[in-house]
Image 1 (tube, rainbow, N blue to C red):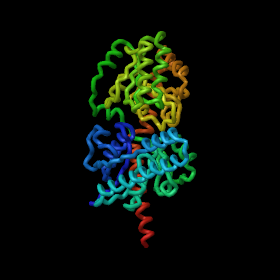
Image 2 (tube, rainbow, N blue to C red; image 1 turned 120 degrees about the horizontal axis):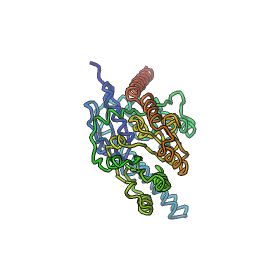
Image 3 (cartoon, rainbow, N blue to C red; image 1 turned 30 degrees about the vertical axis):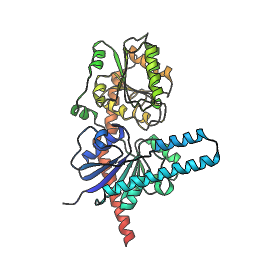
Image 4 (cartoon, helix red, strand yellow; image 1 turned 90 degrees about the horizontal axis):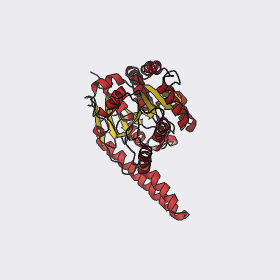
Length: 413
């Protein structure tokens, strides 16, 4: 029997769910390959489902990430205007960054010392670790761009090394092609993340659902906003919309599910809005939830309010596949999932008044929510169905490995 090709996937994600969950879900299904995940955190803390036998995980330690480097550079520029001190400060930061780079590369090589790696995939665009590893291991390389800032590590030599450049949405690919004009367009393609929300819902269990069940039992229109809680995700826009609607539609409830990203001021702002307008009985901050699909099952509206470029918005796809009406701001890839007045509803980013207008129409029944939700469900399964994406990735992996092996063979001869 032919040995399985080995694919190593690096993802520097800090939180559970999102891109890492979809990457592992996909790997679990592609049993013709062997997968190794490299993360900065234990995979069991990022992914709450069992791993298939052909999927393993290894952890490496990073002491100096991009966020810390950026914070130090910002602090240095704010604390001193002395050019000499800035020069040496920036040199020191660069040294820390380089030491961290060497550290994570060496750790990964030690953990894969006796393993043959056929392909390395970077879940986060151009990054030094997968680039170094693919070069040393003489493996094929794929850059998978999932966010607009996935070019931040990019260097000319590093960027041009990949066999394929994959983007989670067409608008994300367009944006990167404009930002990184040296990308080889003939090797760039869109491959959406895979979703089978109904199947996943049936396989998972829920935590306490009493609060959302109580809303439904009392005739509330329930809006679920599931996203990391930070300014860029715009939860304050959602709360402001409820403030404007609270008198006209007293039975609209908003549930904000997601973890705070350490921004204490933003958390205080949200809680203060809720308290000031006496909304604590119908605007709930429920924290991080592993059972978001179960919450969606009870929700009437799945709302997203991003202010900044959103690569796609996986929670939108999950909601659509579960037959929930989706409403989101039109930024980045959201308009690929939600086609206004056909598969859901869009409003301009940050435009609270227009969001209020849409929610008011839904509450009054002047929008056919059921028809939009059904169209959204069909659209989501047609374009993001798990089997479709699995087959695309099988082809990409096989072709990338075969092409790179041929290139190595041609060079050796």
